[in-house]
Image (cartoon, rainbow, N blue to C red):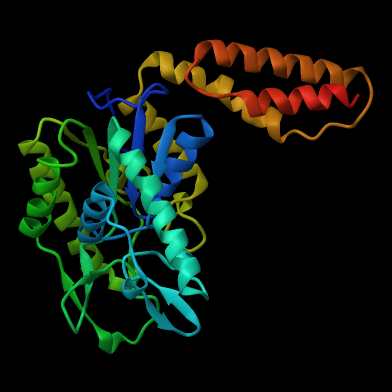
Length: 325
């Protein structure tokens, strides 16, 4: 007897490996996958303007980052003692305009370098609902808790989304592998009906792009949560975001989808290194020496397996610990 419908994910042509460079952007769900990739030493950069939820803001970010068009003080707004940009997440807000511009442009330059070097790009759409400034119609990435009268809310259309990304796929994203995914995070503030409609618009838009461009793939994170796991025990306490267990499950499916067996085989070894780096040992005694020696052996093995990854910090950590015995 079967009590659930498990979604089978097979190896695709989209490839993530330690020798390839990646660029990621999108909703907070993209942060979960980015955190895993970074922890396992994949060469990836994410969200140079902070978390973004709607596809039009993500497209605008890609265009600006690719052209490396820097921001100036005139691009900022000021309210409640903070300088902020409507293109950026609130994490970029600062009390000083100079400080805000400095941080914003530093991250833009870092993003430009990463996008220029990227072999693959992963984009996660959260909602098709967008907010436009009432005064000029520009789509904002974040409303920064400003009065609702300053914005108008509308649904981005499938054609509008496809047209924006067709331009990118024929330009800055041409020649790169591009993976789209729709975030399983429910935007309950939109209302359940509007959230359902929003996710449908995103899914149709991505399907059209995948049909039109051979370098585009879709990873079913939305379907994994809603059609495979499909239970509130796989949500966090807010009943909106996936739980840690659900993220673990999606990560496993992502490995099946995007990684060769040789890459996946390295993950347990990298996991042991991460655990060793976080391990706190009592000073003194032969046990510490054994722990350091084994950890240094593990670092040497991984450096041999992944010569393009720098493990010098980990090596220095265990060598320092060994010398302090």
